[in-house]
Amino acid sequence: MRKQFRTALIYMILASVTIVILFPVAWMLSTSLKTEPETFRMPPTWVPLKPTISPYLNMWKIKNFARYFFNTAIVSITATALSLLLSVPASYGFARFKFRGAQGMLSFILLTQMLPSVILIIPYFTLMRTFGILNTHLALVLAYASFSLPFCTWMLRGFFAGIPKEIDEAAMVDGCSRLMAMVRVVVPLAVPGIGATSLFTFLLAWNHYLFSLALSLNENMYTISVGLGAMMGEFRIAWNEMMAAALLATVPTILVYVFLEQYFVQGLTGGAVKG
Image 1: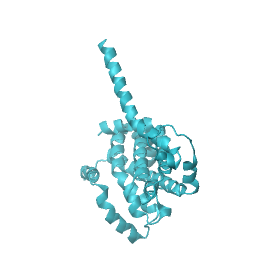
Image 2 (image 1 turned 30 degrees about the vertical axis):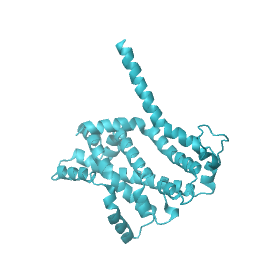
Image 3 (image 1 turned 90 degrees about the horizontal axis):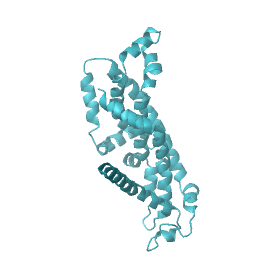
Image 4 (image 1 turned 90 degrees about the vertical axis):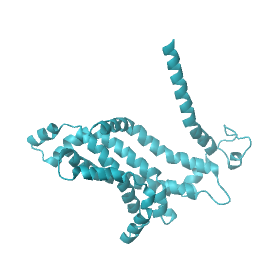
């Protein structure tokens, strides 16, 4: 009896949490299918009286949402690739080689994660303007890759440390160089950790607002987060179009998470317990 009560209580708690999480999503979906006058109807209606997909069509045809979506996809994918390209060999080196100053460098990498990104806006802006790449995709890619690089290096270092060194040595005995042993043997074993760090970097770049706003000087360079803010006018806010845009912006992140979810859980666990 006590076990059944405990099980029922757990399911009730899970159901309550699920409702709290899904309530905003359901309201966004409902609002995105309403006409603009109906969004201000009192009392509000859960089910649209005259469902319409015009808010979604307006976002793609009239608004600049397609451009925002393209910018965000380019920046997020490229930043993720660049972060992995740098963090994988760096973390492998920290895990496999003992050299003077390694622990100090790892401590410094961890320390950089404690700094709020807002204090770096002015230095980043000045640096990108000096290099002549302000208001470009490259500026955003470098910013987001640099934000995620310390976390990715720290996480992957723990994951590589959990892979026996004998695997590398066996590959090199069979004729592989150190680089080929890493690429062809060790990296495939670290796929869960790489998947977790990829998800972290992608979501960071996709959702980040502050640096996108600071480094994008015109509307053609806006990412989705900045574009959504720009849709809020002084005298008019089309909430149905805003909700449609928010849902469209959420779909890629959900798909990426569903695809990498198993790697995300394994990667966080593996990187956390290996040192």
